[in-house]
Every structure is written in structure tokens, then in C-alpha cells.
Length: 112
Length: 113
Image (tube, rainbow over all chains, first blue to last red; front, side, top):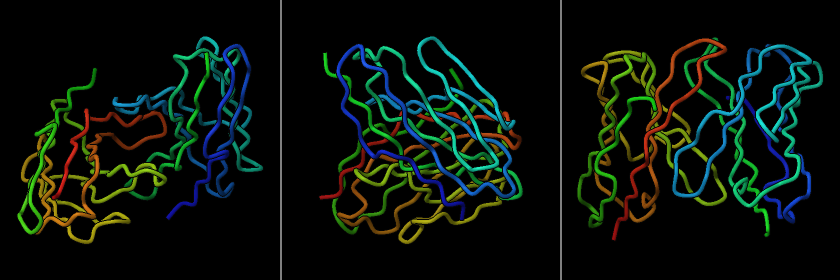
């Protein structure tokens, strides 16, 4: 079992604020990391796939960084909007094992 | 959108009855997964399959069984439903490889009364 921790568990920010949250994981035997966005009443959808130490990915106002040596990834949202409200999950795809390991997620609420 | 369909989308059943949820994919992905979503727990893996007739348990497998007789279908059965199995169930598909993301079905909301 891969121990994946996300923090904070939940977050409330005002519209226009920038925010970030963390996915922590064991740094040994790193393979890849995915970020997923999960809106209420919908299914999770992939945001980023990250594989290399130092990777930075960006999609609009959302970006992510990866540090495999210290075992963390940050997700940043610049100028949060109400439509950014969702749960953000990090996950590790199958490598030597056969299953995805998901973190418990960070629930973001953006207050208009 | 990835071709993955769950059925039924909603179900209410009585305690003690068997229930089967179906996940159907048209993507020919090798891996299929059943998760449950509960407040405070995120996604928890129930069972997964890595090929036809090849399945294994996840972290919350008690009270559930699965079958995969063909690539496109992965069935989750609650042998005798209990109220603790009231949840939203998600099926996912994926391959193996760093860049292979998981694709999720729409979810099945199951209520056991």
C-alpha cells in the first residue's frame, strides 16, 4: 500500500485569492503522479500527469510542481473562481503493482 | 469522453438483498477498478481487475465480490447488502504506464434501507 497524504483536507478561499495545496508521498521508487479534479456530482477528471523531478505543468490558472526527491507535489490555483470549487486528488498510477493509489483529496470552496 | 458506462445510476435496495452493479467500457483497457466514495474517505478501492478473470482485492473488499468474464464488463456484487454499503460507487478504467490516466464512470448512488 502506498501512503499518499494530501493537505489541507479542506480549504475555503475568497474569489480572486490564490491558493495551493500539497500531495505528499514516499520519495523512494517514484514512478509518476497524477492530479485529478473532482467536481460535486461529477466524476474525477485528470488535470496533470507528472513524471520527472522538477516537472511543472500548467492549465489556465492551475499549475502543479513536482519534487520527487523530497516526496511532494504542489497544486496552485491563481485568482480562484467559484467554478474552481472541487475536490483535487493526487494519484499514483500502476507500476510494479496493479492499482492506482489515490490521496483523500483537498476540498476547495471558492466563495464569491 | 472515455467510453465507460455504469448501471444503474441510482438504486435503493433493502438490507440483506444481493445487488449487482455493472461497469461497461468500450476502450479495451486492461485495468478496471471499483471504488466507493464516502465523506471523509475520498476514493477507496474495493476490487480491481487486471485482465479477464484476473481480479484482486482492494482495501475495502469485505462484503463485495467481482467478476470479469470479458474485457469490457466488470461487475460488482454486494452479496447481502448492509446499510454500511450505502455509498456512491465509481468504476474506473486505465492502462499501465506513467502517462495512463484513469477514466471514471458517472457513479452509482446506492442506498441500502
